[in-house]
Image (cartoon, rainbow, N blue to C red; front, side):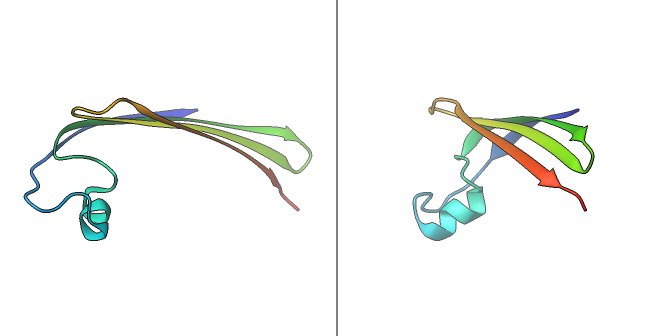
Length: 76
């Protein structure tokens, strides 16, 4: 299991809703931003591995965005 928490303060004076601005800001907004994630990886049998991943971000003036992923890998 692993976890990560970041506080990011962005000073940006461009057009944030342009394709270039979106890429530069990595989907965050100018101002105070928080990102966090939690990963859980477990072997679930002979050659099977399970990965659960939760990511979230909070930008100033926007609600929290939650993302969840599940991955099962067969190792042979």
